[in-house]
Each structure stands twice: as C-alpha cells, then as structure tokens.
Length: 138
Image (cartoon, rainbow, N blue to C red; front, side):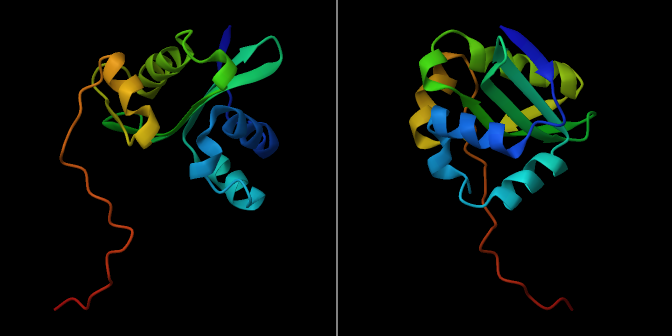
C-alpha cells in the first residue's frame, strides 16, 4: 500500500472511490464541478493506492498549526478492515502538524462503530450551523 500527499487528485478518481466506499450517498457526486471545487480548496489530500488503483482518500481542511477538519475519509469497501482508514487518519495528523494539532471529523452514521473501534474519542459538543438564519447586527 502506498500513501501519498496528492494535492492534484482528479475529481473523477475521487468520485470513483467515493462510490466504491459507500460515501457517495453523502456527497454531491452528481455535481462534478462541486467535487472539483472541494478538491481544489482542500488543504490536505492523502491517498492510499494499491499499485495504481486509488483505494482510499482522506481530504482535510487545516491551518497546519492548530486545527484540522477531516472532511472525507473514504476507503473502497473491498479494502476495508485492513487498517487503511486508520493509516490515512494517522498520516493526516502528521501532515497537518502532528501532536499539537486538534484533528476532528464528523462521522457518517454507519461509520460510528469504526471510529469507536479504532479508539477515537467521541465529543457531544458539535453544532451544525448550515441553517443559521442571517440576522441584523446592532
């Protein structure tokens, strides 16, 4: 298995592995231009390849100093259970700045068990503000 920081991952490869991972149901794979924007604006993309085949991706937004948000962790379902997701997370933490950087993610419901199994700490203080109405300031 080869792990690489790969900032120029193509949208087609990313969408393909999203489909093979099961994460496509939660991502806008019907909007290739949006997927391309997600990749272009990401600060850190780490891939896992078996030969030339893309089998895993970790896509993050980070300041490389204080925080890192792992937005997408996708591993081909045929390759799950081999430590690839855990390795992608560990390499993300290292590439984002190491021990002093707070790395967080939001779990898809089906992945909660995986994150608990690999020893991640669950936090109840997460808020989604996508529907926050704009208000006038005084």
